[in-house]
Each structure stands twice: as structure tokens, then as C-alpha cells.
Length: 352
Image (tube, rainbow, N blue to C red; front, side, top):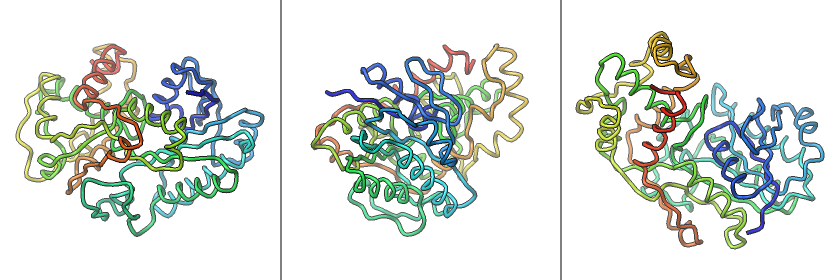
């Protein structure tokens, strides 16, 4: 497998951070682009705000990038603004890179491809399992806008591309706004400290239905594989662990891990944003008592995003047949992905 010079865009996030570490271990030269410089071992930091075109051009000038792995996004007040801002970020990136050296670009989106945008979440009623061939859901969606910018740049500059569509990524990352695993761990730790029950915050549909998730290293492996396998070029791939589960079992198993009582799922959702209102002071006390590295719960937990995932009123299962047919057969047990993450969070004094 030929190793190139990678630019991981969003290197401090859950997807980009794990990908950057994986590529370094695999023998790539890796530059990590983010608004604040990454401090990962082996990753060459590049700091720039992609919305600032001159700053982006200056930061990337002369870098011999052969492969771009685009793992970032920015959230605005509405989906039209999401489309405009995220499109501009990717355009600025491709304008700043030396297109003569660029061989390939990979984009990470997700299952809002099938479910609809944040504003219209659940408006997509694509039948499960979701397949890559499904048509786009009507309405604004910044995932579609990013795809269109990627496709246009690839055609103009002559590089190949891939799109990867994970579902709720599990992996180690601090301060990431889409990190269900750490959010659940923080919630469970607060339940431990306060004696409150470990109540499932989502809908009864999510409690009972089949679903799936994506380990960050499964995604990293698939991204490297697709970017370096000629037959996989110019394809979109769903990216999930390969198993399915029901939250009614997984939630109890997570509760057992933390030694918590798990009541039956309530008839109506109990969102974490409501349950955890005022948790800032509780977490500061927990952090002080256990000498944790982060006392600001807002830098660890993303109540709103976990509520969105667990509050859906529809089944969400992704078909990975296409990826397997093209030759990628790596898989991961989701329960093990959760428990490995929790073990690391404890070892690094992020949770007690």
C-alpha cells in the first residue's frame, strides 16, 4: 500500500484525531489542520480557520499534500447558514492546496444523508437498512453541499474521491460536540455520584428498535483503505461496526459497567439537556474529589447531540454490503467499543 502525505482536516475532533493517529502509525506523513493546533504525537500541526481564505492559503502554502481527509464541520443557527459556511470552508481548502500534487480527497458525512438535516431531522423516511444508492432527502443539508463541492473540485483538478457515512462515532476525543460515548460516560458518572437512576433519555422507539454505531478506528481503517484501493475510488460508503443492537440491552450493559440501577424506559423521553440542567457545579465537585483533568462538563458532554440521536422516533440501520463487496471487511463489536472508551477515559482521569 503506497503511503502518501495526508492532510487531516479537523484533526482535534473525534474522527480526525483518531484518523490522524492511525495514519501516523501506518507510516504516513500527517499534517493536522484545525483552528487550534493539534498536539498529537507524530502529527505536524497546521492552525487555520477555514472560513478565513487568506489565512488558509498562508497556512497551507507549499505543503506537499497528496491526500485530504476532510473530517470537520461548523454549526450555524439554521441549515441554510450551515450550507453556506461549510461549503465555503471546503472551497477555501481546495483553493489553497496545490492541486497538481493532490491525488485523492475523502469526506466524512453521516446518516443525516438519509435522515435529513438538523432542522428537519427524521424527515427522511428512507427504509432501513440505509443504502448508499438512496436519493437525497428534499431540503437543505450541508452534507449534500459538501459532496457537491468535493465532486466539482475533483472534476476540475483531476483527483479521486470517497465519501464515508458513519453513524454516531464512538472514540476518544475531548471537547468534541458529537461524542456520545463520552457524554454517556459523564452522565453515568454523575448518576454514580448523586445516586440518581441511570434513566434512558431517549424515545421508546430507540429503546426497542435495532440500531448501529461506528468505532472511530473502523472509520479510520475504511478511509485509508478506500483512499489507497484503486477499485474503491469515486464511491460513497456507509461505515458502521458490522453489528446491530437494541438500546434496551446496551443501556443495561453500560449501567452494569458503572454499577448503576437501570429503570425501564420512561413512556416519554427524558432529555439529558433537562436531566443535566445545573450539572456544572456537580461535575466540578466530582472533578475536585477525584482529581480529574477537566472540571468543565461543557467541554466533555454534548447533551443536545446525544438527545438528538437517542430521541429519534425511527429505526436507524445502515447497510454495509457495498463496502464488503468492494473488499473492506473490518468490523468491531459496539459494546467493546464503548467499554474500551470508558476504560481509557478512566485511565486518563477524565471520568472517576
